[in-house]
Image 1 (cartoon, one colour):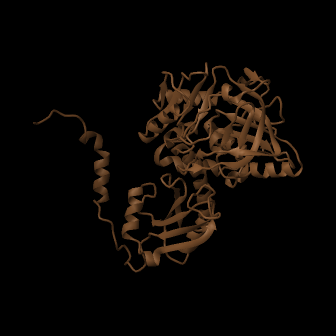
Image 2 (tube, rainbow, N blue to C red; image 1 turned 30 degrees about the vertical axis):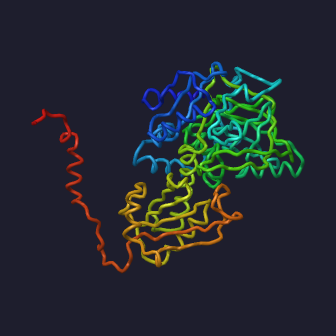
Image 3 (cartoon, rainbow, N blue to C red; image 1 turned 135 degrees about the vertical axis):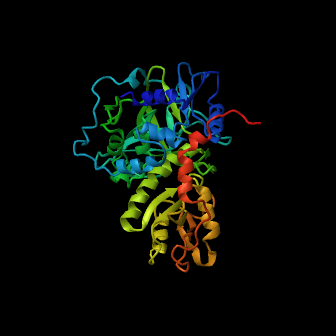
Length: 466
């Protein structure tokens, strides 16, 4: 049940977590440190001295590195990470993991050690940071909101932007499934939708909560259990009929008020632009509960961590769909540099007339804006190699495909009235080259293999000859 804190201890032991004990403000300053560490490809950050928030710590940048994510999911790092993750995500949800069997926690969970149910002022209780210069206030960025379908009682969870207002009000942005449907159904019946916001959870839960509904058929708790290797311990809330992870650091219980709206934003988003103020639903918080010496988890909304947590699960489901529909697809990568809007697809064979079909398939999925096809001799995880294929294997008149007027990502500032032009590029070797033709200039593979195997010997420190 202490998986989140065990994860942090593991990161500390492996020098993947840097502690900052000097006083630092959650108003821009923690974000500035996190941004600097991200650009330097540094470790995660733990801030233990937050003025005005005695006994609180704040942790961020946990998943700006795939290495730290792999560690948290107990998967190998490097080239073996994605195949191992694909294998995990392809496992069926076992029948033993029914709605009442997710390791229900009978004892009093640690997050109930501190409880506030009266005169709640979220702005003074929680060290919620402000990230960007034009943010309208503090935003909870690593909060998993959990609610139940008003019609079926089926539970759903997802990570959304949540603005903290003075008092006990939160402004939420339920623009994606399942929460958008839950809110709509509740409003149609004029119901207050019970919900809980959970902060500080183990990596398997965070990955699952950020996954698109198509992955694991939308059963995010089952996906988290499969990734974890065991059921998720759950416990019941005190003021709402919601079950939450027992190992959470912070739990906010409350209701989403039907038909009440207020302005939210602006806030910096993962496209590194601002989402401007808009009318959003309001959640009234009935209780705030947190552990002794609590650790608040933060994610830079405009940083790499957000992109990884969104792009990687999308990459998994797109890979599953493409390989099921096209036998020549070898691998898929959604690039982080593109804020998750670009897919690169590796093809084992370019024979036949499926290239346009593959591009159109990818561009019609999710909010992917561009799609590039390359051969298997191109490492799709290496932007230098992809750029080389674009430079040497593409003729725009023949190889560009443009799909105008497609549904746009709502955050895309270049879109017009919800529509955007999407495009694909065929950067594969063409059939008019002879078989085996157009080879890349390179060293003999056997020589590269030999040098790699002898690298430690070759680079061993020796006495200088000059």
